[in-house]
Image 1: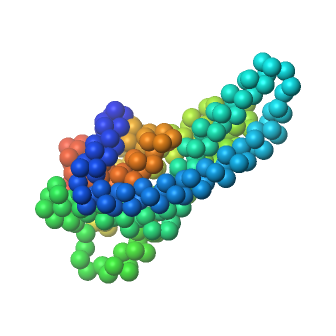
Image 2: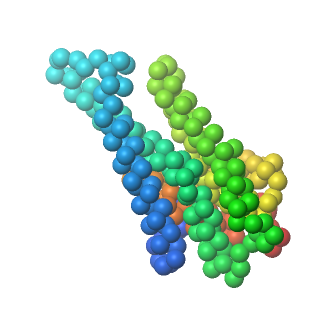
Length: 246
């Protein structure tokens, strides 16, 4: 699966979610909470961004250097906004959004196949703990590690390279958090699902890229389950990832 295909499915998911009343309701519900947490996180980051920049580069007194310092300051603010969106996403996942993701994925699956997969014998309480447990190795730990690498990368001579690598890693695992919804609901082994990810890294990089774009990331994070479920049923069988008929 290609990089551009991943971007396309992310955008298709947003468009389908906006046009479908049930998906729009749950997407807007996620959007509201992600937006609220993003504003809160961004407010804290913006409040302290000069304090973060000053130890790295003290505010100069000359005109040219002061202009360059302001440009770096604004760039840091933009990066902080993107980080705030990702941090808000992780916080909402831990609190409740993983359940909304599951509901949106099931609605999309029923629209595509007429039914929703997954074992009926598993209770709602057990499924809740299973879903939350999947978030730890699938998203929370990898994304937090990527963000820490990005921050520490700013303090080293290899900062730009580390920042690009960590951003790409974060995008891939954020995308996998969505594309793994259906296989996880069918209780496929974790190792097999991880191999699906490794087999389709360009697609996941493309699908996850909008999650890192400030502003767009709030909308794409809200409707990500729709595009990922579309991908699973329309493209994944063709490239041998899994079989929806299983």
